Amino acid sequence: MNIVIDTNIFISALIKDSKTREIIFKTNLNLLFPEFEFQEIFNHTDEILKKSKLKESELHSVLLGLLRKVKIIRVDKIIKYKKEADKIIGNIDKDDVIFIATALAFNCPIWTDDNHFQKQNRIKIIKTNEMIKFI
Image (cartoon, rainbow, N blue to C red; front, side, top):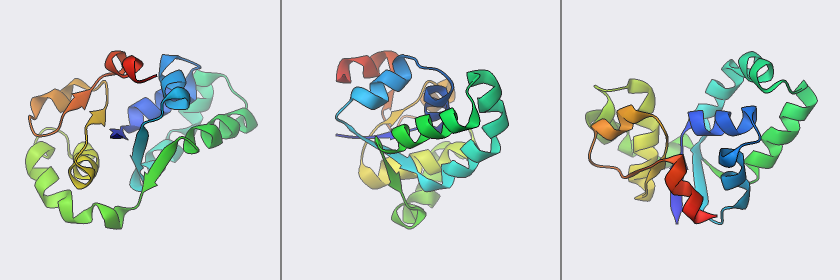
């Protein structure tokens, strides 16, 4: 089963050795992450380092481990779904269009704890407490 993982979930797993990180490391699901969102992670590196209290080398180690567990989805695989995704969530949060487009491209749900995704009804949303059943 494919599931799109949103950036906040990924960053949460970077910051803390938590249930979120455990789910990512232990699940056998195909976790899909749009390549475009790596910029978001890099934009928040200082904040992630501060919150995680990790050294930069430790953060890179955790990042590499997480990257081994997700499938990076290139923009060209989802670009044709962007217009439809914008109609679904663009008026709610433009930053989330890429996740909806990825979910449309792979006909799968999104793992997120952001409540604004619940304001749309096209894509199934799975919260972290529901993901626990997949490990």
